Every structure is written in structure tokens, then in C-alpha cells.
Image (cartoon, rainbow, N blue to C red; front, top):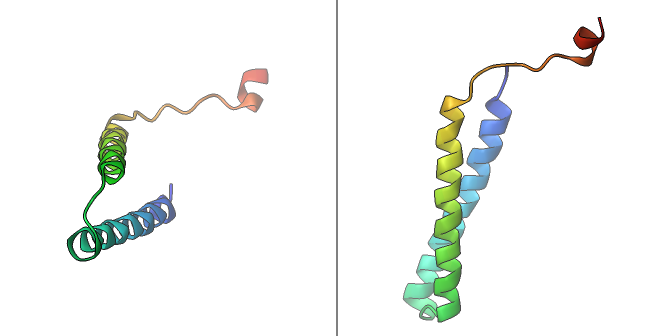
Amino acid sequence: MNTIHQFAAITKNMSGVSSSLGDLAFNYKEIAPRTDLDVAHIDLLVAQANEMIAVAESLKSVEYDPSDSPEETEA
């Protein structure tokens, strides 16, 4: 199975997220302080990141067990 394209797409998306987080850090340091709404959004990002970590870790425990194809079950 070739999963390199999926991993490449995920890596590209993660790079974009990392860049955006860096931009936000710069904005908070140099442009304007965080607001309460910003903090709420940051908390949401952290929760989503933790969920993604859990899902990524769970990929290591997925067992290969292909379902029967319709052709095989009809035979």
C-alpha cells in the first residue's frame, strides 16, 4: 500500500498550521495583545491538537483485517 501521498498532504497541511501559529505569536507580541476571544480560540486549537494526537497514536494499533468483498460473500 502506498500511503506516501496521504502523509505528504498531512505534512503540508501541518506546515501551514505551524506557519499560521507563528504568525499569531508575532501578532500577539508585536501588533496587539490577545483578547478573551483569542484565548477561547487558542483553547479550541489545543483541544483539537490533542484529539489529533490521540487519533494519530491510535493508528499504530489498527490491525489489518480486510472486510470480505461483495464478490467473495456471494460465492
